[in-house]
Image 1 (cartoon, rainbow, N blue to C red):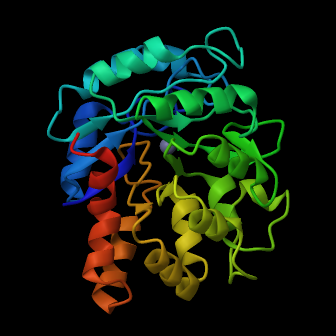
Image 2: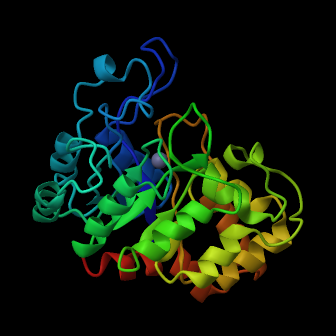
Length: 302
Ligand SMILES: [Zn+2]
C-alpha cells in the first residue's frame, strides 16, 4: 500500500499560454496508477487565497473552489482522501472567528483534514492559532505551507529556528500539524539564516536544526516529505537523511505535491525511498510506515 499524502488538482499555470499540462482528476488517477500509488490525500488549492493563486487562476479553471474540489473528490472514494481548506483570515479576519460551520461541513463530506494552509501570516498569529485549535477540536489534521518572514510569497511565516511554529504547536496540543514547505525543511541544518529560510539549502548539515528538535519534542508534529523542499531535506546530506528517516519513521508521510500532469518537475521521492529500501538503509517496517502506515494511523480508518 502506498499513500501520497500531498496531491492537488487544478490549473496552476501562470498564464493560459504556459506549456504545462494542468492536473485534472482523470490525470491525477492516471498519475497515481503510473507510480503505483494506491490512494492520495487531496489538498484543495483555491482561488480565494490571493497570495497562493497564479495570475490566471480564476479564469483558467472555474472549479477552483474548496467546495467543488471536496465534492469532486467524493467521486473517487477508493483512490482520493479529501481534505478541506480554510484561510485563517476568512470570517471577517478576527482572532475569534467561529469556523465550526465550515469544519462541520468538511466532516459531513468525508474530509479528514484541512490544508495546505498557505496564508501569508506568521504561524503564531492569533487568527492562525484560533483556526488550528478549532481544527483539532473537530479531529481534523492540518497540513501547512511554510516560508520565512518575507513580504512577498505565500505560506505561513517564521523566523530562523521556527519559534513561531513551536508556539503554535504548543498552543494547540490537540491538533496534529503536518509540516511541509521550504520554511519547514530548510531547518534541517542548524546554520539557518533568514535568507535560507525560503530556499533549498544544499550540502552537509552543520548540525541538527529546528526540524529535528520540533519533531522530537512535539508529539503533535508530523511531516510530509513532498515537493523539492522535502526531497532536498532528506537528500542534501544522504547519511543524515537516512538517520532522519529512521528516527522519525513513525511521523513521516510519503507525498509528491505534484501540481501538473506532465513529467516536467517530477521529483523522485518514490524512487529515492525505494533505493534506500533496496540498500538496506531503510528497513521494510520503516519504509511501510512512511509510505502508508503512518497515514493510515492518522486517517484513523477514514
Ligand atoms: Zn502543495
